[in-house]
Image (cartoon, rainbow, N blue to C red; front, side, top):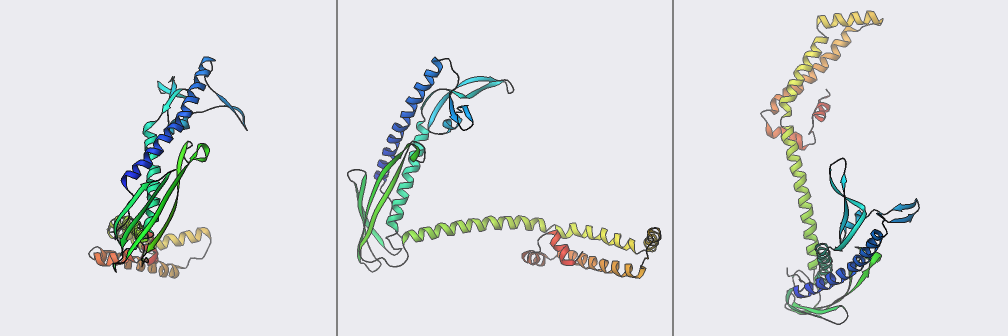
Length: 323
C-alpha cells in the first residue's frame, strides 16, 4: 500500500505562517495589557474590576497565565506556607510565550496536513502505486498539486488537489487569538479507483490497533485476576473446614440440647429432626465444595476452565455450591 505524504517544505511553510500570525495576534494583547497594568499601578491600584451579574468583582488573571502569555505577577508572602506566591489579581507585565505559540502552531499545522493527506488518500486504492507528486504554493493562501500513479493493471491516474486556508481571530478562534482553518477541493482523473481506499485501510488499521490495545489491557487484567483466583482453593478450604465444624456443632448432642433450651425459653416448638436434616444437607454441600477445592489445588486446567466460565470470584463459587 502506497500512501500520499504531504510535502515537508509546504508543511513548514504552513507552520511558519501560522506561527508568525499567531505571535502578531498575541502581541496585540501584550501591548494592551502592559499599558493597562502600568496605568493601574500609576493610579495606586492593586487590581482591576469588571461588572458581572453578581455585581462589581475583582478580575482573577490566573487562566491567562496558562495560555499564550508569559505573565509576571506581583509577589507576596504567604503567611501559612511562609513563601512568596503570585497575586493573580495583580499582574505586572507580560510577554508573548514563544514556546507555547510554537507548540500551538505545530498542532495547527499537523491538523491541516493530516486533513490534506486524508483527502488525497481517499482517492487512492490500496493496490495503486504512486509515481510522484507535484505541489506548489499559489496566490492567496493556496497549495495546488497533483498526485500521479498507476493501478494494479498499469493504468495511469492523477489526483488533483487544492488546499486553501484562512484564519479566525479572537473569540472566533480555538485558542482565543488566531487559528487556521482549511478547505479542500480534490478529484481523481484517469483510471478508476478500485477496491478499498488507502485512507480506509489506514482507518481500519488504527481501529484494529485500538481494539488490540484494549484487548491486551483486558487480558492483562484477567491474568492478574486469575493469579489471585489461583490462591482461592487453598484459602477457601480453610474457610470451609471452619464452616463444617460450626455446622457439626449445631447438631451435636450439646448443640441440640442448647437448641431445646432456647426453644423452651422462647416458648416455641423445636423440631430436632428437621434441624438435623437441614444442617446435614448444608454439611454435605460444604463437603462437596471442600473436595473440589482440594482437587483444584492439583488441577490447574480444571480451575482455569472454571474461571473462563465466569466463576471467577469467591462469592460466585459459593453461590455455585449453594453455601
